[in-house]
Image (tube, rainbow, N blue to C red; front, side):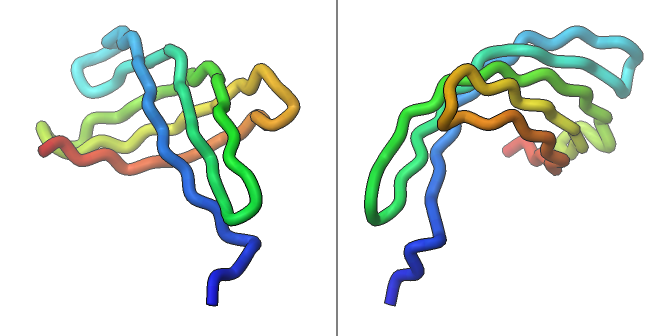
Length: 85
């Protein structure tokens, strides 16, 4: 049985990076998100600002603040771990 409190999200960001130090960079850019659940689906547009620390050539840790432009796009802070394929 599907829990109606769950939702699914697809995110398509485009970032511009600035390298502060060899292992640190900051980024900013737009992000388009499509959020859907069993009752509705919404397209969100926001701007992301963040800092990243490069752990290895394939692994990084970044913190990101998302600024929403509409009522359905709340501001939020996330901590992510990235892996390059």
